[in-house]
Amino acid sequence: MNIYVSNLSFQIESEDLRSYFEEYGEVTSAKVITDRQTGRSRGFGFVEMADDDAANKAIEALNGAVADGRAINVAVAKPKEATNNNRSTSNSWR
Image (tube, rainbow, N blue to C red; front, side, top):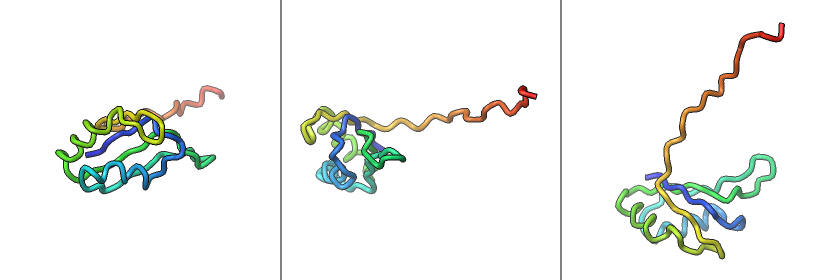
């Protein structure tokens, strides 16, 4: 199950995020999302857990928990919606 974690302290790194969730079961991946230009945390991340029951327990236990001084939000990640990035290809400027 893919889990979305928000309101993270900017000092939390991917390994910290992994350690919060490992208490509840096997973590297959943990990633704090960073800004492409600066490399600094954007304050949210994703955790993938192998077992859905363990993931649900982690969500229940960690949603609202304080991590590095901030109450974090933890929920099932929603699938990324397909975006229509196709800009008009008409040559209306001609």
